[in-house]
Amino acid sequence: MWYRIACFILLLIIVYQPLSLIFANREQFFAKTYLQRYTQLRNLYYSSHYVKKDNPSIIPDNVFEAFVGGAFFYGTNPILIVHEHPPMGRYIIALSILLFNNESTLIIPSLGAALFGIYLIGKRILYKALFALIPVAIFANEALFISKVSITPLIESIQLPFIVFALYFFMKGVNEKKYLRWFVLFSISLGFIISIRFFILGGVLLFSTLFYMSIFRRKLDKRLFLFLLTVPLCLLVLVLSYSRTIQDGYTPFQILGVQKYIFFYHQSKFLSFFSFWDLILFNKWHTWWGLREISYDTNWHILWPISVVLTGCSIVYSFIRRKLNSFYVIIALWVFMYVILLSVGISTSRYFLPLLPFLYIIAVSFIVEIVKYIYARK
Image (cartoon, rainbow, N blue to C red; front, side, top):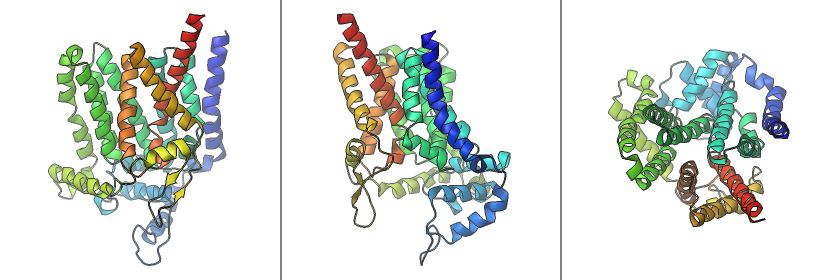
């Protein structure tokens, strides 16, 4: 009985703050007013720093995303407006406008799906629902997560569930008999990841899964072949996200060439090596504009450095004791590879969204293992 009560309390902790915020800002999420506001958003965009060089106004990212979603809704060719990311995330915003006449409504199920996926992964590693709900409860009450609920729409909120479920589908694919369908779902999810934001994150995710399969290649030889066979589906999703561009005469190969431009656009961000560690451990944010001063991030929480330390201890402890749950290894590899990526470029807390929930899962698993070890010794 107490177990169910504890799970229920954790579930309330997970949903209370996000749902309270959504209810308090229900006009933002449910008012069917976008089409009436589109002209105003369009004027803001064309007088902003995105277009004007002399005396531009500065508009926040969510206002920009709201305008672009509307522009895509009205059929604008993506490459005429946005150049830094592929267009799929903005098309999902356009879908929200189509269905609800509101640019933010679909953010709610998107973030809800991410939390559910984190729970499913946590359950695979921590086994018990009670333990799996703990990292979800921590993440759902993070200032960083809450900011994605209050400031909408942003494309990292749209991308997050695809990252979470890509990892979950891969877990299912390498551990279940009917693995082909899970690999297909993984590749489609990966396609959405690289079609929503700069493809480097999807590349790191793919590399971490391939690295896992190379470690266990003797057990996964047949699966590896079919896995590689399904991976090109992600490119199909990417090309389809540019359907409007193809209608204007671009070929699929030219669409892939656009990714080269996106890569060079983001290449300038590969500086300030290891600033990630200063931010996540000590809340020292290395800014990249003006005098490049060191500031602080209001989203920072003491649990960030604690979870990093516990994750490191957990990985070392698991290797020493050779207690390597396959699900754990997949998540540990993702964390390791993504941290390497974050360590070689400009760092900001918005990039931590796909990292923190998995740090919390590993940290909680380490605490559970230590408690079990101490209890067994007694």
